[in-house]
Length: 169
Image (tube, rainbow, N blue to C red):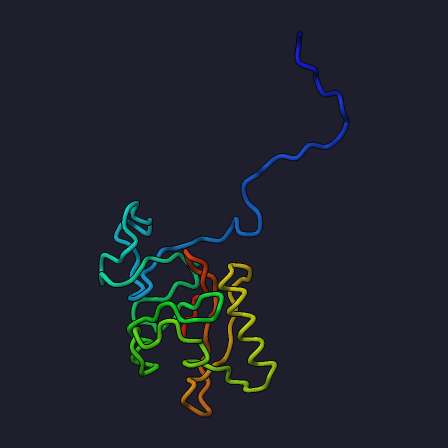
C-alpha cells in the first residue's frame, strides 16, 4: 500500500537558522583576567579553566561587550549575587574576590540615582541580563562606600551558567 500524499493547501512550518540572535557574535573570555582562550577564541573541548591565569572559568559573552584584559568587571547571577570579580575590580572596589563571592551586588555597587526607580532599573537590567533575556544596556552606579561618585557600567548577558557581565567603564 502506498503512503498517502498530502494534498492540503495548509501552510507548513520549517525550522530555519537565525532569529533575534543570528547576527550576534559571541566570544570566550576568562572570568578572572578577561584573556581569550589560546585556541583562537574557541572553547577548549575538555578544559574551562583559563590557561593564562589558571584561576578563572571561561565564560562566553557578546563579542562587543567582552572586557579587555585589565578592565574591571563583575559577573552577577540571577539572584544578583557576585560570582566572579576581575583582579582590577578587586583593586578598584577594595575587596578580594573571596570576600565578594556570593555577596549581593548592592554591597559593592549601588545605583548612582538613589531613587527607588534607579534601584529598580539597575536590578531589572541585571536580572534580565543574567537570564540572557535582554540586550546590552548601560547604567550609572557608584561604589557602595562612596558618595557622589558616578561610574558608567555596561551590563550584558554571559555564561554558562547564565549570568550578567558588569563592565566598569
